[in-house]
Structure formats: structure tokens, C-alpha cells
Image 1 (tube, protein in one colour):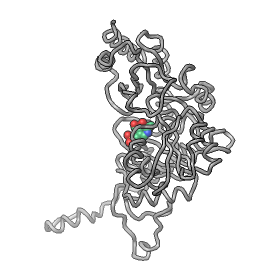
Image 2 (cartoon, protein in one colour):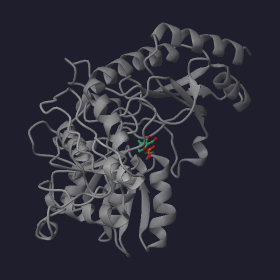
Image 3 (cartoon, rainbow, N blue to C red):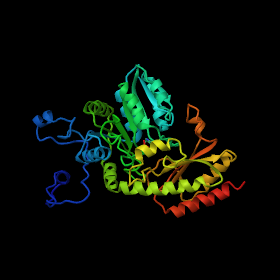
Image 4 (cartoon, protein in one colour):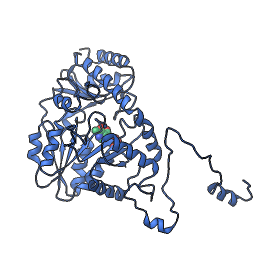
Length: 409
Ligand SMILES: Cc1ncc(COP(=O)(O)O)c(C=O)c1O
């Protein structure tokens, strides 16, 4: 290439004639970054349809990179259509904002991911949408709360922090019988513990929508925020896609690439998190300061039988669960002692989220999180652990040492 003037160089850097050799194929897909997408002519611009996967119009909507992730996630969860959102919470908000109108009501389980409840309490209320909180362990309570105004029911299996596992198929049956749309926050199950679009294994029972915080297991690195909205219902998909477009929700191609890079190892990682979490949860259950262990795969945990029924057949009958559990520290120990225990951990870092390689711990104040009584939970401070990929023996030693120092009374 010859250079003459600065202007010439500027143009040539943009309209460069170098073409890489053809025929490059590699395990990871190419990363396509774009706001602008070129059309060969005006007729093509007019003809292109942005609502399906047959073409490209603008980077905000899709690129080859985002299409790939959408398709893989739809396959993972057993859906037909998928939308990407900039975070798990953005995916939650997109569903609620697209399906709820003034005068409607949405039902949310009392143990739902907190910001989902906050969205209903503040934003949805501003738009004239009311909400009620139902008991996740009592399908009759859910049934009683459904009214003519109920348009949407949020489901979570298990619930955030306290990990109660609901009778998900029964909850879905109740909503179906009343013609109410169901949306599952499937972040915990991740498409691996159970099939949200085939809850009974015979194709007869399905949630309508599955939302997934890809921030957790699909990303696997603690470094990406992203969410997905998957459905088998084309009309629902289109409705949510239109809202998604009007809200201008885009995801960065490098983040999409990071998730595409991590997805192939997700099942292996999920299994490793699961095994380590079950081992540590069982061990913690035998320690004096621990009054209760909340892990759906453990027999005494609230809703264990429902976990067994839905997830127990996975992985050769061992069942499948995420690497997440909580303990209730005996009420005779003060909040200050619990804080000292958390502060004293070296491998478990203090921080929100889960699904990354590093173990995390957070103490919670249950009273501020729940509207309904929780007689199934023992008195005391709840501490949630997200188990990473470290050696289990090292994590156990970390817990034992800090417990000994913090709870010596
Ligand atoms: C169950 C559940 N759903 C949704 C989210 C939201 O995901 P994000 O952090 O990507 O907004 C989280 C995050 O902690 C979560 O735990």
C-alpha cells in the first residue's frame, strides 16, 4: 500500500484493501462488533426484517455473535426463542414491563430475588401495576391470590438466599388452569438441574418464559453481567422483543464472547460447584454454631421432596443442584460474631453473586427481606455461601478456622 497524504492515509485505514486468507475456522466463533450494519442498497434496507433471525439491521438488535448465544441458550433451556439483556435484572424487568399494563397484578414468591420484588414495589407501582407476595411453599396460597387482574406469576426454584424448593409443577398447573402466564427465574437451575419447558418429562407441562442471569454459571468468571429471556411461545417472544427493542437493551460483543467461551464448560463447572457445596453444607450441618442448613438436596431442607421430584433424576440419580446454600447460625450467637466469622474467612470472599471460580459469603438480615412469617426457618442469622471451584478441603479448613475464632463462646 502506498501512502501520499494524511487524508489518503485516513481513508486507506478505513477502506483497507488487505483481506485475510480465506478458510479460517476455529473452535470459538468470531466476535462481531457493530452499531451500524451495512445494507448493499436501499431496497435491501427496506426489505430486511429485524424481528426474526433471517437478517441484520442494527447492532443494538442482533449481530452474528448475539444470534449464536441466543440460539445456544434456547437449546440449553429447551426453548425456541431467546433474547439477551444487559443483566439478569434487566431480563426480569423486560418481562414484567412487556407483559403488565395499568390495572394488572403480578404475583411474586416471598423468597424471590430481592430486586425483582423491589421492581414491583416501586417501578411497576408507578405504572399502576400492583403486586402480591405469595408463600412459595404453599400452592394453595398461590391459587388463592390469583384474581381476574393477575397477568403474570413469577416463580423461583429454589428461592433466593433461603433456598426453599417449591412444588414447581403444581404451581405451573395452578397458573395454567387460571390462564395466567408463568415466568421462572431459572438462574439456579441454569438449564442443567431440570428442564423448565418440560417439567414432567413427557412434554405436557412447561413454564411460559424462563429468565436466566447469565452473570452466574454461563459466564462462570464473575466478570460479566448479562441476562436472557427464553420462551417456546412465538407470540410472547415477539411481544417481549418489541419491548426489548423500545427499551434499547443491547449487550456488548466482548461480553457475549466471554459467555460463548464459557458455555462449553458449564455442565462440568456446575457439577463441581454442586458436589463441593453439598459436601460443605453437610459438614456445616454438624458444626455446633449452625442451627440449620438450607440446601434443597439435603433431606431436612424446606422443599427437599420437591427438589428430589424435579431434579433428583439428573446425573445418574444423584440429582443436580447449584453450588449455593445457606446456614442459619444459632441465635445464641450475636450478629457481631457472625460478622467476625465472615470477615475471618480467607478463601470465601465477601461479595454478591455466584457461579464464578471464587467462593463467596454474605450474611443476610432475613427480617428485612420477607413479608410473610417463616416458621420453617430456625431463629438466627442467615449466612449464604456460593461455593467456587477451589479444593473442598481448603474451603472446609477456612470455614473451620474462622468458626473456631468467631464462635468460641
Ligand atoms: C436468582 C437471581 N436472579 C437474577 C439475578 C440478577 O442477575 P444480575 O446480577 O445479572 O442482574 C440474580 C443476581 O444475583 C439472582 O441471584
